[in-house]
Image (tube, rainbow, N blue to C red; front, top):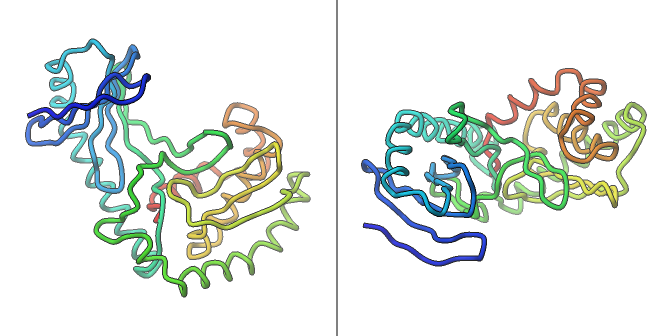
Length: 251
């Protein structure tokens, strides 16, 4: 059975299809290539496909990647369990990665950075505030928020003092938020940095990495060669830290 609804001008249609016992959301757009993503927090399967491609071609594309899809769903479940253990079962908002495959690139990609009107480190917003069956509003109690905020306020002065001297620029303002898909973000034009409140409940090295990442955006927007060169200079082990951080779910 297929359910179809018309959406925006850029999206021709959205179908929900059963493929080999898997529920798949198919979004058709005026694009050339086909993409397969397994999205947190529930391991939802989404295909973005060219407008004129047949349903049969989409079914074949998904069916031949069933093993990969199941592996990514298990990985997302492990990430959620690891994160809940890390914060003692209390907290809440965005997820660091959406697993994906491309029709012309069979290797799985792990986009850990999402760019819109500002530079940010995190993931695509899934529009779902649940971690498993727990709602983020329930998880982020007033006590947990207070504890996370106090931790950030205690750590940041020394970090800012050190990294302002190393990087050569400083933010005009830093705010803490329960973020839905990012660990942090920066608006270079204003110098404002936003940090995910969850960092206050995690190992200090993750806060340091995200802070350096966002402060580097004060020199270089985006995540191209210049940004990477600066990160290599400021924090040589940043890639390893990024990989470690991306093991955890943003609550």
